[in-house]
Amino acid sequence: SQYVALPLIVPPRYEQKDLLVMLDAAEKKYLSSAALLSTQKDKLQEYRQALITAAVTGQLDIGEEAA
Image 1 (cartoon, helix red, strand yellow):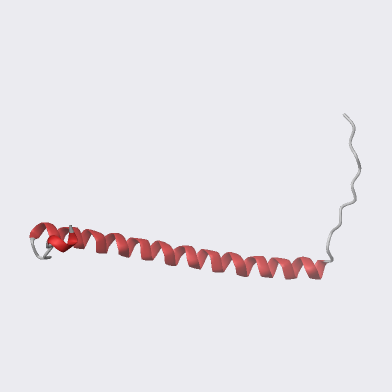
Image 2 (cartoon, rainbow, N blue to C red):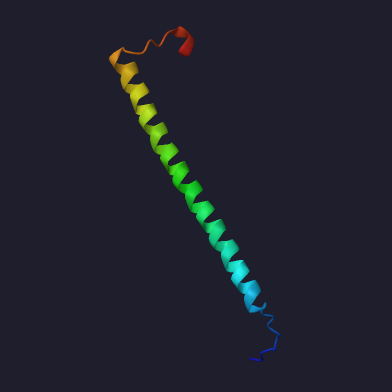
């Protein structure tokens, strides 16, 4: 097989550092958002279970309009 030499363009060191800072900030924002969504999902699951329990035990009135 034959390889073709392609030029590799590497940004200057200061640009590499700036990119790393930007990527690190984006990763932290993503992880923070993911953690928040996970917490909200857990709370919604707890709320759902509480509603089901209240409905089954008769603490929550489920009339004809809900059906």
